[in-house]
Amino acid sequence: MAKETTNKMKKQVAYNRKWNEQNREHKRYLSKRSTAKSFFRVATKEDIQAIIEFANEQLKERY
Image (cartoon, rainbow, N blue to C red; front, side, top):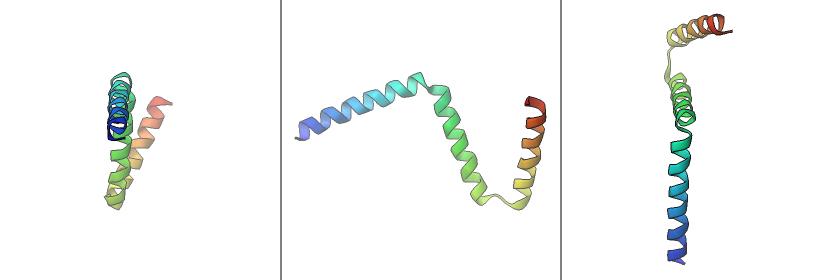
């Protein structure tokens, strides 16, 4: 049974590696989004206000 588990783990590692290589930009996006959410948990009121202003500027420029 240990050998079977090891084979499954090797296949999963190989699959993950292949997915990561094929989806590099999406993985980077997810990582940055996670970092941003984590920052909001510790951000001050001033930080959040500055981010809101920046986000509003980006919305005007892009959309």
